[in-house]
Length: 344
Image (cartoon, rainbow, N blue to C red):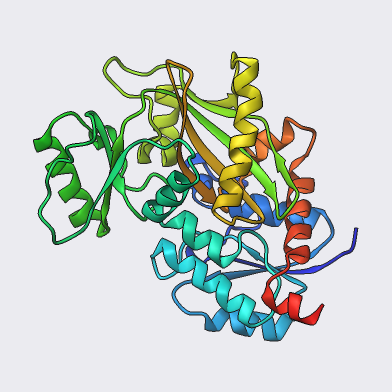
């Protein structure tokens, strides 16, 4: 393995301390991915330079000019507070002819735009729930062709931002109220899709051209109160206390019919290629009681924490966490953007 100089780009407020000693789990949770990644990369013997970024590209430019990294390891989830702008940062790196980890700009843009990605998947005849977009500033009317209950969320944000039990609506009045909440509180267009009651499944995919699909993972709730839907709300995603209260677990999906186990990896590959993804991604699915699989969304550059579902599903195939990060780095070095193709 070649020792590389790696500029690890992350959000400024998430730069972790050198050690977690004396810190409680809730405090560590905020920057756990950054801590895990930095620790593993250093353990691999790479020269690691952490770099915090807020709303300006200048620190990245200075970091590249000063350290001349072999690779930028991208841990950003947004830029200037806008999820879609993450793709522009990567476009800028391509313009500078700087290798990076994770997804390419086009794949980031398509997967971040939930409405556009659904249209692309529908064109490829990939099963998705029926949906409608509610743009800000326009009159909110219940869609005639969709069946209640509907699931209302931001059309742009990820990481379960704005998702709560109230996101599932059963009436037109509740739909209007929740769409207004997304418009006013999150500041984005709203997306309403037919709610698929069933199992929450995740599939990790790794690769550029040749793809590796990790085992299907599942989120379960061991202590879900009566009348509460099993969905990954913002509290489920970000509150350790709430996770413990509901008994939230993610583990290998069990009891899937053999035909479905064979179908899901093929479906994940189709989605990955249809959206032009590269590097690594997580595909979110729902399995209904009739055994039908629906694609909820594709997440380019998902959470890379050591004990999150992407890394855990890789570990289930014998790929330990440091090796996973090394493979992600290798994919970044080998990815062929347009400037490399011209030089070839």
